[in-house]
Length: 502
Ligand code: BES
Ligand code: MN
Ligand code: ZN
Image (cartoon, rainbow, N blue to C red):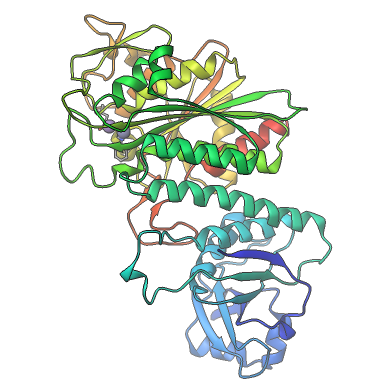
């Protein structure tokens, strides 16, 4: 595990394996960024010459390693490109990405000192968050293939930051708490579905609650049957791994408002009787990414002691085909009494969410956000890097978008056209679980969920099907596999509510 700290030692005398400095784009090639002055002086101009000989440009993400040959205690300098030098300082996202790229480049290193232009506590926090997120990789299942793989960098010391700056220290602490939650969400997504059943997930939630200081209640299949949770039970009934509904409760004595977070937790989505074809099911262990994000956000809110009540709901089930599975054509009696005709058992996320949303609304939160890897259609619309935000309240939707943007999670507002509701009229039940065509499938799913939101609750729905799982190579602070997307957005929304910004 990587630890991050603030150090007061001068860069040149720091006993470290690597010193990290920045470069920016100049007229003809890379120019050293602020923070590197003492190191540049010790090199007596040869550092810039070396970068020029290496054809360094200072482009964002560019990396160069230069030996110090005794100019500093550390034997090596790592130069990270930061791109154009903005007049008003680097954006937090530039620093976050630089942190991630640096962390990966430092794999195998014990101790690194960082002398970058980190001005202000927020910049320190952003870079630090990037380091701790970029250092992540999922190694749990490597045995023989672990050989030769480098451990994550152990100690990263941020230099040149006012030693007793309380705000900077708090930002580092906050970055550590945030990254811990995001990395746990990534682990949960990456754990294969044979080792993460609904019961396993619920047990991890119980542990997390003990460690972070929030209440956890688990409804097992018997309690779900007693309570009439027909949506969650209907989706889970084809699997030997029985479903769960988990309630997470974090409260602050001075909190004035409550926000409920509801996560889709399909530990594996085979499609059920409407089976997905080969090629579409290999990554469906990711289908609990929404629930993982909710657990992470509640844990971070609790660890940070935010002045807001946060309730989390994890709707956990495994969607499998079998003799006991829900059939296309079955009608489910949902929690709260509505009936839903299931025409496609692969549209299962909305069924488990509907029960959880109804249940969450019984506690009358002011706000409710659900998070789900809900539709392939949202991926078609927005691609793999961005999630869609739908809401019953434009102001709230914009606030969620704003929070997401500030933390560097890409998202975009999508509409909920009321006209589309009639596509889900059922000839025999209150509602069917899909529309008439694939067109606008992401919006249809959102409109379905809206049916279950109580009046007076500001609700937003995040469809994270695209960005929840990254099939490409790691880049910046985003790893391969589970990304932990939405943890930071949800946490920022909770913070904004605590700060009365929302
Ligand atoms: N879990 C999937 C959505 C998904 C697809 C997430 C790809 C991540 C990557 C969801 O349960 C699903 O199967 N949705 C269907 C709905 C359809 C049957 C109405 C879809 O999008 O095809
Ligand atoms: Mn599905
Ligand atoms: Zn699904």
